[in-house]
Length: 477
Ligand code: IFM
Image (tube, rainbow, N blue to C red; front, side):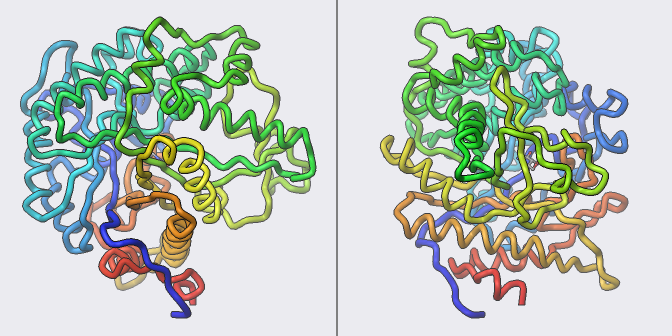
Protein backbone atom coordinates (compact mmCIF):
# COMPACT_ATOMS: atom_id res chain seq x y z
CA UNK A 1 0.00 0.00 0.00
CA UNK A 2 1.60 3.21 -1.18
CA UNK A 3 0.22 5.65 1.32
CA UNK A 4 -2.87 6.21 3.40
CA UNK A 5 -5.02 8.92 4.83
CA UNK A 6 -6.41 9.12 8.36
CA UNK A 7 -9.84 10.22 9.47
CA UNK A 8 -10.13 11.91 12.86
CA UNK A 9 -10.68 10.07 16.14
CA UNK A 10 -14.37 9.88 16.91
CA UNK A 11 -15.28 9.72 13.24
CA UNK A 12 -18.54 7.73 12.82
CA UNK A 13 -18.24 4.65 10.61
CA UNK A 14 -21.56 3.16 9.64
CA UNK A 15 -23.72 1.49 7.05
CA UNK A 16 -27.17 2.54 5.89
CA UNK A 17 -30.39 0.91 4.69
CA UNK A 18 -34.02 1.91 4.29
CA UNK A 19 -37.17 0.14 5.42
CA UNK A 20 -38.89 -0.53 2.10
CA UNK A 21 -35.65 -1.61 0.46
CA UNK A 22 -34.86 -4.41 2.91
CA UNK A 23 -37.70 -5.29 5.27
CA UNK A 24 -40.20 -7.27 3.18
CA UNK A 25 -43.17 -8.42 5.30
CA UNK A 26 -45.16 -5.65 3.68
CA UNK A 27 -48.45 -6.86 5.13
CA UNK A 28 -47.24 -8.33 8.39
CA UNK A 29 -48.24 -7.05 11.84
CA UNK A 30 -50.81 -4.64 10.49
CA UNK A 31 -48.66 -2.74 7.96
CA UNK A 32 -50.68 -1.27 5.10
CA UNK A 33 -49.58 -0.23 1.62
CA UNK A 34 -47.11 2.53 1.00
CA UNK A 35 -46.97 4.38 -2.30
CA UNK A 36 -44.17 2.03 -3.32
CA UNK A 37 -46.35 -1.08 -2.80
CA UNK A 38 -48.89 0.54 -5.10
CA UNK A 39 -46.27 1.69 -7.62
CA UNK A 40 -44.82 -1.83 -7.83
CA UNK A 41 -48.20 -3.02 -9.10
CA UNK A 42 -48.16 -0.56 -12.02
CA UNK A 43 -47.12 -2.55 -15.11
CA UNK A 44 -43.70 -1.42 -16.29
CA UNK A 45 -43.03 0.89 -13.34
CA UNK A 46 -40.41 -1.33 -11.67
CA UNK A 47 -37.90 -3.51 -13.52
CA UNK A 48 -39.01 -7.13 -13.86
CA UNK A 49 -42.17 -6.37 -11.88
CA UNK A 50 -40.11 -6.66 -8.68
CA UNK A 51 -41.82 -5.75 -5.40
CA UNK A 52 -40.89 -5.11 -1.79
CA UNK A 53 -42.91 -8.06 -0.51
CA UNK A 54 -39.88 -10.11 0.51
CA UNK A 55 -36.92 -7.83 -0.24
CA UNK A 56 -34.09 -9.02 2.07
CA UNK A 57 -36.61 -10.37 4.60
CA UNK A 58 -34.89 -8.16 7.14
CA UNK A 59 -38.14 -8.02 9.11
CA UNK A 60 -37.44 -11.60 10.15
CA UNK A 61 -33.67 -11.84 9.67
CA UNK A 62 -32.68 -8.66 11.47
CA UNK A 63 -30.63 -10.39 14.21
CA UNK A 64 -28.39 -11.88 11.52
CA UNK A 65 -28.07 -8.47 9.84
CA UNK A 66 -27.12 -6.81 13.10
CA UNK A 67 -24.53 -9.56 13.62
CA UNK A 68 -23.08 -8.63 10.23
CA UNK A 69 -22.72 -5.00 11.34
CA UNK A 70 -21.00 -6.25 14.46
CA UNK A 71 -18.66 -8.51 12.56
CA UNK A 72 -17.71 -5.58 10.34
CA UNK A 73 -16.96 -3.56 13.48
CA UNK A 74 -19.21 -0.67 12.49
CA UNK A 75 -20.19 1.70 15.26
CA UNK A 76 -23.36 3.09 13.68
CA UNK A 77 -26.31 1.91 11.64
CA UNK A 78 -28.65 4.19 9.73
CA UNK A 79 -32.09 2.64 9.34
CA UNK A 80 -35.48 4.06 8.47
CA UNK A 81 -38.86 3.44 10.03
CA UNK A 82 -41.83 2.69 7.78
CA UNK A 83 -44.67 5.15 8.27
CA UNK A 84 -47.39 2.65 7.18
CA UNK A 85 -46.09 0.15 9.77
CA UNK A 86 -46.49 2.71 12.52
CA UNK A 87 -49.67 4.43 11.31
CA UNK A 88 -51.42 1.95 9.02
CA UNK A 89 -54.46 4.21 9.02
CA UNK A 90 -54.76 7.89 9.83
CA UNK A 91 -54.81 8.30 13.58
CA UNK A 92 -54.26 4.60 14.42
CA UNK A 93 -50.87 3.75 15.89
CA UNK A 94 -49.86 0.11 15.34
CA UNK A 95 -48.00 -1.11 18.40
CA UNK A 96 -46.65 -4.19 16.60
CA UNK A 97 -44.89 -1.93 14.08
CA UNK A 98 -43.32 0.12 16.85
CA UNK A 99 -42.33 -3.05 18.70
CA UNK A 100 -40.39 -4.24 15.66
CA UNK A 101 -38.28 -1.07 15.64
CA UNK A 102 -37.92 -1.23 19.39
CA UNK A 103 -36.46 -4.74 19.13
CA UNK A 104 -34.15 -3.55 16.37
CA UNK A 105 -32.90 -0.64 18.46
CA UNK A 106 -32.32 -2.90 21.47
CA UNK A 107 -30.46 -5.34 19.23
CA UNK A 108 -28.19 -2.56 18.01
CA UNK A 109 -27.48 -1.21 21.46
CA UNK A 110 -26.75 -4.70 22.79
CA UNK A 111 -24.08 -4.95 20.08
CA UNK A 112 -22.66 -1.52 20.86
CA UNK A 113 -23.96 0.01 17.61
CA UNK A 114 -25.52 3.48 17.61
CA UNK A 115 -28.85 3.70 15.78
CA UNK A 116 -29.43 6.63 13.42
CA UNK A 117 -33.11 6.70 12.56
CA UNK A 118 -34.52 8.27 9.39
CA UNK A 119 -38.23 8.97 9.69
CA UNK A 120 -39.04 9.26 6.00
CA UNK A 121 -37.23 7.27 3.34
CA UNK A 122 -39.92 7.43 0.65
CA UNK A 123 -42.58 4.97 1.90
CA UNK A 124 -45.49 7.39 2.23
CA UNK A 125 -48.63 5.55 3.40
CA UNK A 126 -51.00 5.05 0.49
CA UNK A 127 -53.77 6.51 2.66
CA UNK A 128 -51.84 9.78 2.72
CA UNK A 129 -51.32 9.77 -1.05
CA UNK A 130 -55.05 9.17 -1.44
CA UNK A 131 -55.49 12.46 0.44
CA UNK A 132 -53.10 14.31 -1.89
CA UNK A 133 -49.76 13.01 -0.62
CA UNK A 134 -46.96 15.58 -0.44
CA UNK A 135 -49.03 18.02 -2.50
CA UNK A 136 -51.45 18.47 0.39
CA UNK A 137 -50.62 20.69 3.35
CA UNK A 138 -52.38 18.13 5.57
CA UNK A 139 -49.34 15.88 5.22
CA UNK A 140 -47.48 18.15 7.63
CA UNK A 141 -49.71 17.40 10.62
CA UNK A 142 -49.77 13.70 9.81
CA UNK A 143 -45.97 13.63 9.64
CA UNK A 144 -45.77 15.36 13.02
CA UNK A 145 -48.11 12.71 14.48
CA UNK A 146 -45.99 9.95 13.00
CA UNK A 147 -42.82 11.56 14.41
CA UNK A 148 -44.47 11.76 17.83
CA UNK A 149 -45.36 8.06 17.70
CA UNK A 150 -41.87 6.92 16.64
CA UNK A 151 -40.09 9.22 19.04
CA UNK A 152 -42.43 8.16 21.85
CA UNK A 153 -41.49 4.53 21.30
CA UNK A 154 -37.76 4.89 20.60
CA UNK A 155 -36.68 8.26 21.94
CA UNK A 156 -35.43 6.85 25.25
CA UNK A 157 -32.76 4.96 23.27
CA UNK A 158 -32.43 6.67 19.87
CA UNK A 159 -30.54 9.96 19.98
CA UNK A 160 -29.76 10.54 16.28
CA UNK A 161 -32.69 11.50 14.08
CA UNK A 162 -32.94 12.30 10.38
CA UNK A 163 -36.30 13.74 9.38
CA UNK A 164 -36.27 13.18 5.60
CA UNK A 165 -34.10 11.35 3.16
CA UNK A 166 -33.45 13.15 -0.15
CA UNK A 167 -36.58 15.32 -0.45
CA UNK A 168 -35.46 16.19 -4.00
CA UNK A 169 -36.25 12.61 -5.05
CA UNK A 170 -39.60 12.60 -3.28
CA UNK A 171 -40.66 15.84 -4.97
CA UNK A 172 -39.08 15.79 -8.41
CA UNK A 173 -38.89 12.06 -9.20
CA UNK A 174 -42.18 11.27 -7.47
CA UNK A 175 -44.36 14.13 -8.68
CA UNK A 176 -42.63 15.58 -11.79
CA UNK A 177 -40.47 12.92 -13.47
CA UNK A 178 -42.75 10.07 -12.41
CA UNK A 179 -39.88 7.53 -12.21
CA UNK A 180 -40.60 7.10 -8.50
CA UNK A 181 -43.82 6.52 -6.58
CA UNK A 182 -46.42 7.87 -6.75
CA UNK A 183 -45.46 8.26 -10.42
CA UNK A 184 -47.13 11.60 -10.99
CA UNK A 185 -45.94 14.01 -13.68
CA UNK A 186 -47.41 17.30 -12.57
CA UNK A 187 -45.13 20.33 -12.22
CA UNK A 188 -47.30 22.09 -9.64
CA UNK A 189 -47.51 18.90 -7.60
CA UNK A 190 -43.70 18.69 -7.51
CA UNK A 191 -43.34 22.31 -6.45
CA UNK A 192 -45.99 21.93 -3.75
CA UNK A 193 -44.22 18.76 -2.60
CA UNK A 194 -40.93 20.65 -2.20
CA UNK A 195 -42.57 23.05 0.21
CA UNK A 196 -44.63 20.52 2.14
CA UNK A 197 -41.64 18.21 2.55
CA UNK A 198 -39.64 21.07 4.04
CA UNK A 199 -42.56 22.12 6.20
CA UNK A 200 -43.03 18.54 7.43
CA UNK A 201 -39.32 18.48 8.24
CA UNK A 202 -39.78 21.64 10.30
CA UNK A 203 -42.77 20.12 12.10
CA UNK A 204 -40.77 16.98 12.90
CA UNK A 205 -37.90 19.08 14.25
CA UNK A 206 -40.37 20.81 16.56
CA UNK A 207 -41.59 17.44 17.87
CA UNK A 208 -38.06 16.12 18.37
CA UNK A 209 -36.97 19.31 20.16
CA UNK A 210 -39.27 18.37 23.03
CA UNK A 211 -36.47 15.90 23.79
CA UNK A 212 -33.34 17.80 24.84
CA UNK A 213 -31.22 14.71 24.23
CA UNK A 214 -32.18 14.39 20.55
CA UNK A 215 -29.66 15.21 17.82
CA UNK A 216 -31.62 16.23 14.74
CA UNK A 217 -30.78 16.62 11.06
CA UNK A 218 -32.02 16.11 7.52
CA UNK A 219 -30.37 14.31 4.60
CA UNK A 220 -30.10 16.01 1.21
CA UNK A 221 -28.76 14.53 -2.02
CA UNK A 222 -26.92 17.50 -3.36
CA UNK A 223 -25.05 17.37 -6.60
CA UNK A 224 -21.95 19.03 -7.97
CA UNK A 225 -23.06 20.49 -11.28
CA UNK A 226 -20.09 21.56 -13.40
CA UNK A 227 -20.44 23.41 -16.71
CA UNK A 228 -19.54 20.85 -19.39
CA UNK A 229 -17.48 23.52 -21.14
CA UNK A 230 -15.87 25.65 -18.43
CA UNK A 231 -15.49 28.47 -20.94
CA UNK A 232 -19.17 28.55 -21.91
CA UNK A 233 -21.42 31.10 -20.24
CA UNK A 234 -24.47 29.10 -21.43
CA UNK A 235 -23.19 25.92 -19.77
CA UNK A 236 -22.37 27.82 -16.59
CA UNK A 237 -25.91 29.20 -16.50
CA UNK A 238 -27.37 25.72 -17.10
CA UNK A 239 -25.22 24.28 -14.29
CA UNK A 240 -26.38 27.07 -11.97
CA UNK A 241 -30.00 26.23 -12.78
CA UNK A 242 -29.40 22.57 -11.90
CA UNK A 243 -27.72 23.69 -8.68
CA UNK A 244 -30.83 25.76 -7.97
CA UNK A 245 -33.42 23.04 -8.21
CA UNK A 246 -31.36 20.24 -6.71
CA UNK A 247 -29.31 22.00 -4.03
CA UNK A 248 -30.24 25.58 -3.22
CA UNK A 249 -34.04 25.15 -3.21
CA UNK A 250 -33.58 22.92 -0.15
CA UNK A 251 -30.46 24.31 1.51
CA UNK A 252 -31.41 27.99 1.33
CA UNK A 253 -34.74 27.77 3.18
CA UNK A 254 -33.22 25.37 5.71
CA UNK A 255 -30.24 27.60 6.48
CA UNK A 256 -31.33 31.12 5.55
CA UNK A 257 -35.12 30.93 5.77
CA UNK A 258 -35.61 32.01 2.13
CA UNK A 259 -36.17 30.28 -1.17
CA UNK A 260 -33.67 31.31 -3.87
CA UNK A 261 -35.21 33.99 -6.06
CA UNK A 262 -33.99 32.51 -9.37
CA UNK A 263 -35.68 29.21 -8.54
CA UNK A 264 -38.91 30.93 -7.49
CA UNK A 265 -38.84 32.71 -10.86
CA UNK A 266 -38.17 29.48 -12.76
CA UNK A 267 -41.17 27.89 -11.03
CA UNK A 268 -43.28 30.95 -11.87
CA UNK A 269 -42.24 30.75 -15.53
CA UNK A 270 -43.96 27.36 -15.63
CA UNK A 271 -47.07 28.75 -13.96
CA UNK A 272 -46.22 27.05 -10.66
CA UNK A 273 -45.61 28.42 -7.18
CA UNK A 274 -44.40 27.36 -3.76
CA UNK A 275 -47.50 27.41 -1.49
CA UNK A 276 -45.82 29.40 1.28
CA UNK A 277 -47.94 30.74 4.14
CA UNK A 278 -47.01 33.09 6.97
CA UNK A 279 -44.61 31.50 9.43
CA UNK A 280 -43.64 28.61 7.14
CA UNK A 281 -40.11 29.73 6.43
CA UNK A 282 -39.37 30.26 10.13
CA UNK A 283 -40.58 26.71 10.81
CA UNK A 284 -38.43 25.29 8.00
CA UNK A 285 -35.34 27.15 9.19
CA UNK A 286 -35.46 25.71 12.72
CA UNK A 287 -31.84 25.20 13.82
CA UNK A 288 -30.38 21.75 13.15
CA UNK A 289 -27.66 19.73 14.86
CA UNK A 290 -26.16 18.32 11.65
CA UNK A 291 -26.71 17.98 7.92
CA UNK A 292 -26.58 14.61 6.18
CA UNK A 293 -25.33 14.50 2.60
CA UNK A 294 -25.80 11.62 0.19
CA UNK A 295 -23.35 11.71 -2.70
CA UNK A 296 -23.00 9.26 -5.57
CA UNK A 297 -21.97 11.18 -8.68
CA UNK A 298 -21.15 14.54 -10.13
CA UNK A 299 -22.50 15.85 -13.40
CA UNK A 300 -21.27 17.87 -16.34
CA UNK A 301 -24.07 20.13 -17.53
CA UNK A 302 -24.45 21.47 -21.02
CA UNK A 303 -26.98 23.94 -22.35
CA UNK A 304 -27.19 21.73 -25.45
CA UNK A 305 -27.83 17.99 -25.87
CA UNK A 306 -24.81 15.75 -26.20
CA UNK A 307 -23.57 15.47 -29.78
CA UNK A 308 -24.40 12.07 -31.24
CA UNK A 309 -20.79 10.86 -31.07
CA UNK A 310 -20.82 11.25 -27.26
CA UNK A 311 -23.83 9.04 -26.76
CA UNK A 312 -23.66 5.44 -25.66
CA UNK A 313 -24.31 2.94 -28.48
CA UNK A 314 -28.00 2.93 -29.29
CA UNK A 315 -28.75 5.86 -27.00
CA UNK A 316 -31.23 8.29 -28.55
CA UNK A 317 -29.90 11.86 -28.93
CA UNK A 318 -32.06 13.25 -26.17
CA UNK A 319 -31.40 10.38 -23.78
CA UNK A 320 -28.94 12.61 -21.97
CA UNK A 321 -31.58 15.25 -21.41
CA UNK A 322 -30.97 16.40 -17.89
CA UNK A 323 -31.43 13.78 -15.22
CA UNK A 324 -32.92 16.62 -13.20
CA UNK A 325 -36.65 16.72 -13.89
CA UNK A 326 -36.76 20.43 -13.25
CA UNK A 327 -39.74 22.75 -13.36
CA UNK A 328 -39.75 25.76 -15.68
CA UNK A 329 -36.05 26.24 -16.16
CA UNK A 330 -34.12 26.51 -19.41
CA UNK A 331 -32.71 23.39 -20.90
CA UNK A 332 -29.86 21.58 -19.19
CA UNK A 333 -28.37 18.30 -20.31
CA UNK A 334 -26.02 15.95 -18.54
CA UNK A 335 -23.16 14.98 -20.83
CA UNK A 336 -20.42 12.43 -20.54
CA UNK A 337 -16.93 13.67 -19.76
CA UNK A 338 -15.29 10.31 -20.14
CA UNK A 339 -15.16 9.36 -16.47
CA UNK A 340 -15.76 5.74 -15.43
CA UNK A 341 -19.41 4.93 -14.81
CA UNK A 342 -21.25 2.60 -12.46
CA UNK A 343 -23.95 0.08 -13.35
CA UNK A 344 -26.44 2.94 -12.83
CA UNK A 345 -24.58 4.83 -15.58
CA UNK A 346 -23.57 7.36 -12.94
CA UNK A 347 -20.14 8.92 -13.35
CA UNK A 348 -17.52 8.10 -10.75
CA UNK A 349 -16.12 11.40 -9.52
CA UNK A 350 -14.73 11.14 -5.97
CA UNK A 351 -13.32 14.65 -6.02
CA UNK A 352 -16.90 15.87 -6.41
CA UNK A 353 -17.53 14.62 -2.87
CA UNK A 354 -14.59 16.64 -1.55
CA UNK A 355 -15.79 19.72 -3.41
CA UNK A 356 -19.36 19.23 -2.23
CA UNK A 357 -18.38 18.87 1.42
CA UNK A 358 -16.17 21.94 1.26
CA UNK A 359 -18.83 24.01 -0.52
CA UNK A 360 -21.65 23.01 1.84
CA UNK A 361 -19.42 23.65 4.86
CA UNK A 362 -18.49 27.08 3.51
CA UNK A 363 -21.93 28.15 2.31
CA UNK A 364 -24.30 26.68 4.88
CA UNK A 365 -23.24 24.37 7.67
CA UNK A 366 -20.02 26.13 8.72
CA UNK A 367 -21.83 29.46 9.29
CA UNK A 368 -24.57 27.54 11.16
CA UNK A 369 -21.87 25.91 13.30
CA UNK A 370 -23.02 22.35 12.61
CA UNK A 371 -21.20 19.29 11.31
CA UNK A 372 -21.75 17.25 8.16
CA UNK A 373 -22.16 13.50 7.88
CA UNK A 374 -22.00 11.55 4.64
CA UNK A 375 -25.19 9.60 5.27
CA UNK A 376 -24.92 7.61 2.00
CA UNK A 377 -22.23 6.87 -0.51
CA UNK A 378 -21.66 3.77 -2.57
CA UNK A 379 -22.06 2.27 -6.00
CA UNK A 380 -23.89 -0.37 -7.99
CA UNK A 381 -21.73 -2.65 -10.10
CA UNK A 382 -22.53 -5.93 -11.80
CA UNK A 383 -21.12 -8.26 -9.17
CA UNK A 384 -19.86 -11.70 -10.05
CA UNK A 385 -20.15 -14.45 -7.47
CA UNK A 386 -17.03 -16.58 -7.67
CA UNK A 387 -17.02 -20.38 -7.60
CA UNK A 388 -16.20 -20.15 -3.90
CA UNK A 389 -19.34 -18.05 -3.34
CA UNK A 390 -17.27 -14.92 -2.68
CA UNK A 391 -17.69 -11.54 -4.40
CA UNK A 392 -14.45 -9.77 -5.22
CA UNK A 393 -16.03 -6.41 -6.03
CA UNK A 394 -12.87 -4.58 -7.01
CA UNK A 395 -14.66 -1.59 -8.52
CA UNK A 396 -16.90 -0.97 -5.51
CA UNK A 397 -13.94 -1.44 -3.18
CA UNK A 398 -11.99 1.19 -5.11
CA UNK A 399 -15.03 3.46 -5.26
CA UNK A 400 -15.46 3.39 -1.49
CA UNK A 401 -11.75 3.88 -0.86
CA UNK A 402 -11.60 6.83 -3.25
CA UNK A 403 -14.64 8.48 -1.71
CA UNK A 404 -13.36 7.94 1.82
CA UNK A 405 -10.13 9.58 0.71
CA UNK A 406 -12.16 12.49 -0.66
CA UNK A 407 -13.81 12.85 2.75
CA UNK A 408 -10.36 12.83 4.36
CA UNK A 409 -9.19 15.59 2.01
CA UNK A 410 -12.27 17.68 2.76
CA UNK A 411 -11.55 17.30 6.49
CA UNK A 412 -7.92 18.32 5.91
CA UNK A 413 -9.21 21.39 4.07
CA UNK A 414 -11.29 22.35 7.11
CA UNK A 415 -14.74 20.92 6.40
CA UNK A 416 -16.35 19.65 9.59
CA UNK A 417 -17.25 16.13 8.45
CA UNK A 418 -17.80 13.68 11.27
CA UNK A 419 -18.95 10.43 9.74
CA UNK A 420 -19.55 8.24 6.71
CA UNK A 421 -22.27 5.65 6.14
CA UNK A 422 -21.77 3.16 3.32
CA UNK A 423 -24.78 2.64 1.09
CA UNK A 424 -25.70 0.00 1.53
CA UNK A 425 -25.22 -2.72 4.11
CA UNK A 426 -27.13 -5.15 1.88
CA UNK A 427 -27.98 -5.55 -1.78
CA UNK A 428 -31.61 -4.48 -1.80
CA UNK A 429 -34.66 -3.18 -3.67
CA UNK A 430 -33.23 -0.35 -5.75
CA UNK A 431 -36.56 1.38 -6.40
CA UNK A 432 -37.53 1.47 -10.10
CA UNK A 433 -34.57 -0.83 -10.85
CA UNK A 434 -35.91 -3.55 -8.56
CA UNK A 435 -33.25 -6.06 -7.52
CA UNK A 436 -31.22 -5.58 -10.69
CA UNK A 437 -28.82 -3.02 -9.25
CA UNK A 438 -26.68 -4.08 -6.32
CA UNK A 439 -25.28 -1.45 -3.94
CA UNK A 440 -24.53 -3.74 -0.99
CA UNK A 441 -21.19 -4.27 0.68
CA UNK A 442 -22.86 -7.55 1.64
CA UNK A 443 -24.16 -9.72 -1.19
CA UNK A 444 -27.71 -11.04 -0.93
CA UNK A 445 -28.76 -14.09 -2.91
CA UNK A 446 -32.38 -13.22 -3.63
CA UNK A 447 -33.26 -16.92 -4.08
CA UNK A 448 -31.93 -18.16 -0.77
CA UNK A 449 -31.60 -14.78 0.98
CA UNK A 450 -28.10 -15.83 2.09
CA UNK A 451 -25.83 -12.93 2.99
CA UNK A 452 -22.13 -12.89 2.07
CA UNK A 453 -19.84 -9.95 2.82
CA UNK A 454 -18.07 -8.74 -0.32
CA UNK A 455 -14.43 -7.60 -0.58
CA UNK A 456 -15.68 -4.01 -0.21
CA UNK A 457 -17.09 -4.91 3.22
CA UNK A 458 -13.66 -6.12 4.29
CA UNK A 459 -12.00 -2.92 3.04
CA UNK A 460 -14.61 -0.83 4.84
CA UNK A 461 -14.28 -2.85 8.04
CA UNK A 462 -10.54 -2.40 7.99
CA UNK A 463 -10.83 1.35 7.39
CA UNK A 464 -13.32 1.59 10.26
CA UNK A 465 -11.04 -0.41 12.56
CA UNK A 466 -7.97 1.69 11.86
CA UNK A 467 -9.46 5.05 10.89
CA UNK A 468 -7.24 4.79 7.87
CA UNK A 469 -8.22 4.89 4.22
CA UNK A 470 -6.01 3.03 1.78
CA UNK A 471 -5.56 5.08 -1.37
CA UNK A 472 -7.29 3.65 -4.39
CA UNK A 473 -4.21 2.75 -6.41
CA UNK A 474 -3.34 0.42 -3.56
CA UNK A 475 -6.85 -1.04 -3.56
CA UNK A 476 -6.87 -1.66 -7.30
CA UNK A 477 -3.33 -3.12 -7.31
O1 IFM B 1 -31.03 3.25 -2.94
C1 IFM B 1 -30.99 4.64 -2.91
C2 IFM B 1 -31.40 5.16 -1.56
O2 IFM B 1 -32.66 4.70 -1.19
C3 IFM B 1 -31.43 6.67 -1.56
N1 IFM B 1 -30.19 7.20 -2.05
C4 IFM B 1 -29.68 6.68 -3.28
C5 IFM B 1 -29.62 5.17 -3.22
C6 IFM B 1 -29.05 4.61 -4.54
O3 IFM B 1 -29.86 4.97 -5.60
